[in-house]
Length: 107
View 1 (tube, rainbow, N blue to C red):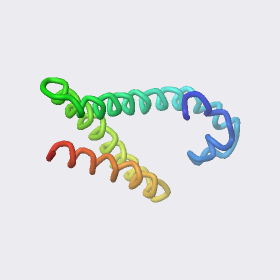
View 2: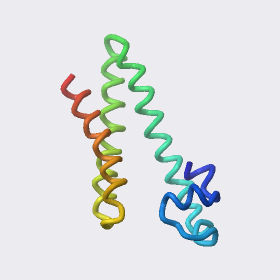
View 3: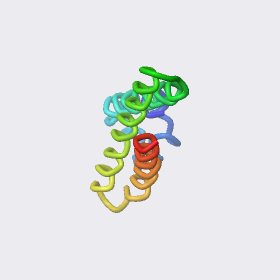
View 4: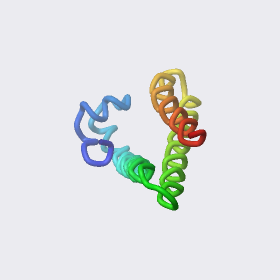
């Protein structure tokens, strides 16, 4: 979303950006952030597929899911430190990722 659709008001508005000029200034950062998020999501998705396998593939799957989800949970904690306006999105980012880490690590 940040990488490909950033210049749309509905997209940059979701991130608290108030104008197209502001969005254009932030565009390189949003582009990078979007692909970073996509890379983590692809890693977790591949890991989830590998969780259905046995042997080494299962180990790799668990590793990918735990690592990617731990990165997302940490990012949620960092987001929570940026101000009260970001607390709700931080919770939505942190909780599913942290639960995934627990479930996969314990399972």
